[in-house]
Length: 373
Ligand SMILES: Nc1nc2c(ncn2[C@@H]2O[C@H](COP(=O)(O)OP(=O)(O)OP(=O)(O)O)[C@@H](O)[C@H]2O)c(=O)[nH]1
Ligand SMILES: [Mg+2]
Image 1 (cartoon, rainbow, N blue to C red):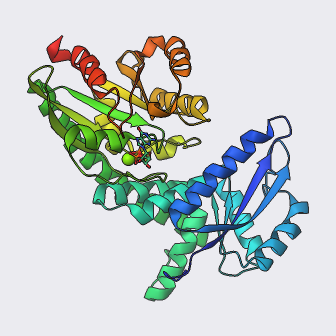
Image 2 (cartoon, rainbow, N blue to C red):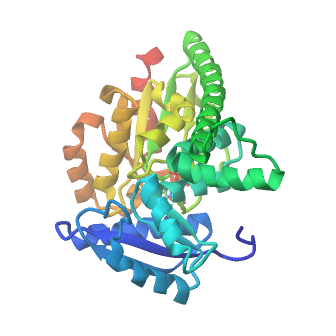
């Protein structure tokens, strides 16, 4: 276990696809580095392998292993992160290989890193349960089983059924755990669903704030509701859903607004599935505000990522509105271009920080929410 005082030392490993522009790889690395910072670690080494697809067994290929081992030893690396999502089998091979340079080493891929951030920061029992479920699926029985072996040794138990091999035992234990958590999550989802139905029956309209992580959703939520939820220049500052009502002056009625966890690219469907109960408010809102950081050079790619997740969540396009945030920092020419390009989504421009464009946004919302049409 890593001590709480020590800042974990990270090494990043990435593939550089010769067919893709170099900038793509740099921005991928930058994003993983921000994730490492959010986790509370620091990057001390990086290794790039030039190939289009990862090696089936070791991901980086046997030739690069020696180089990786040397970097781990020289830089006293605690955790290695692969900057994409890889298979549990590849993670397992890399873990056992890198243990030669540091027996305590941890090897994560991008998804494990995201899950570890969630684990560290989750506070509600629902978030904890969802993360446990996602981790279980992500690790697969083999890596999950390693933890089980250790805990059984520590507890002095470990009786196997007649004729049951270690692998079978791991698989059984893994499946049982998965089933148990799935059941608990289902209960939570049902409870949430009945709250949503109750609100709909009472005719209380809801809109949700959704978008890439760090776009400014919580800043806007706080401005609208007067709440003081955590706002941070970090990825995944918010890990739950919050719903609050506020008085919409333009209509003379109260409306509900929900804030939720931010999205990020390469989230595997398993992970989105695990977060379904948190995202329920978002999916069932009457209007979905896609909050976009228009000061971000990677904006278009991030819009595409969020759109893809909307598709998986079956959010209807007709309910989505684009809200370009941090608009105090872009020119009116850029605004015009964005407005023309995304006409379909009634684009509007705001600064959640300075208050610019908020009144206009509220007028549009008032017109779109069902009760007031
Ligand atoms: N310049 C500028 N910065 C903003 C604006 N709105 C938010 N920010 C900053 O952007 C960063 C992220 O803001 P959050 O509100 O935490 O973003 P979020 O979308 O809730 O992020 P996650 O919860 O991590 O997904 C913070 O540093 C905010 O101060 C804005 O209108 N202009
Ligand atoms: Mg937030």
